[in-house]
Length: 244
Image (cartoon, one colour):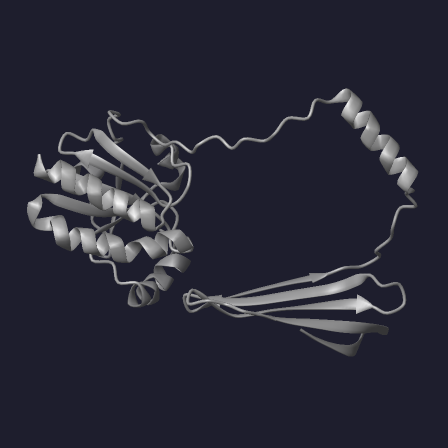
């Protein structure tokens, strides 16, 4: 962190710069905050990060900042009234769920990248099909790609097909980004773009979501999100079903 002085719009400020440690996925992270010397309020913030060859820049300019004249007694009395009127319960997050096992997978039609031919999801059904619901700006989706390539190669000759189902990136801007994305993240299995408005049929609670489907289109197994444990679970499930 460094602090310097800077004049902005006739206002003397302290500029606070943070260089933030990144990782292999996100680099060139920094944030600047400008504080008005006269009244000690933040008047400007900007932020930068780079990921997957793309830059994110955000800036906030704050004007006419004012403060209410609230006393500690007022806040304490208000909190007391809230505690008297409302019951406080511990928040418990419900587990995320997609379509249940045994459900028939919706047979949605889409566009195959990159030849733009049309296909239905049932067109990919073999002994087993692993559908990966993903999109380009999803870090966990990107982390899952090497595993999916590995599963595609490992079990392909045993009847498995891997299909990446993408409901978000079939537009001119993202299609122009796709070649660069695939240069950085080689995908060795088919990508099927489907209608974003119809994705509700699949009850996707988070991305990525994986559905393992049999040759009749029935869901055998699902996995929400991605990490090392989920990767092992997917591999184990595939091995069990393909041995049967």
